[in-house]
Image 1 (spheres, one colour):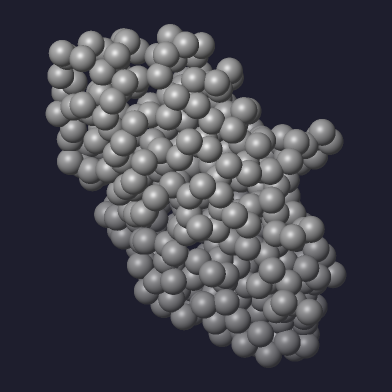
Image 2 (cartoon, rainbow, N blue to C red):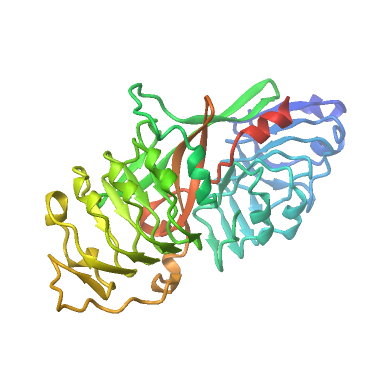
Length: 392
């Protein structure tokens, strides 16, 4: 199909318009939003050759629209703002330019916003940070944005005690996905998770995320306080990264009970005290970094600790023992800030973790930085309980 059917322009009570994956060219005609202004629920126009909207409205006037899909077209010009009622807006894979209008802040009901692979510029509106209680997916990659990423509301460390899915060994291979929008236009919209992570010096891309993968990355935020002892229950945790925060207190001895741990990074914090000897019993530990803290005393010896080099301990003036000597003074600690990263690294890393509440499995994410080499997606998936309540 290369054009919109002529008879549709006389329909004034359309609720769902499915014309995706055709070859419709040119502008989206004005009658599509004027004739069914009060009835339209979803518009699916992805995968065509559309170039924009006729008369280029700043905000589309549908009053009850819940889904607008424009992905993989040839849409040009500034980003058209969807109605305030919109739950999902897909506009990735187009040629849109200019800045994201501040009018997007009026669409507070958004659960999904995908604008990747365009030519959008300027700053990301700070109001997107206020959407984080409801916004489940935010995809802005491969544009030309500048400035700082809006602060999102992260995940308090004390919530670790509620994370059940990493407490038990998972034997059945399953892949993580979520229902984003139930029953819009007769369709249930779901999303498979895909991530790129770095672990043990190797970058791995996962088109689908196995339930066997248990990573927690809270790096490069501003978390304060102590590392909670409740982390002891994460028996199936493989990688824990709390680096580049403002954490204080000592390293909990209970970390030694995380027998599946392969990577442990708590560098660039304000941690004090000794490195617990119990950590020497972690037989799978291959990556260990406690650099640039205020740790004291001897370095544990034996097993995996015989393999770690000086870089694992630098910036702790009172640590001694192999591979350091007690007379050796490691390099001073740099300021605890993100200044060590240049602008190309100042992006948000998202590592997906499986989080269980009670008897139900829920998928969440952890925020950090270093996207340039560690994460190809900027996805925000918030807890689903709230969404379920809204859709009942």
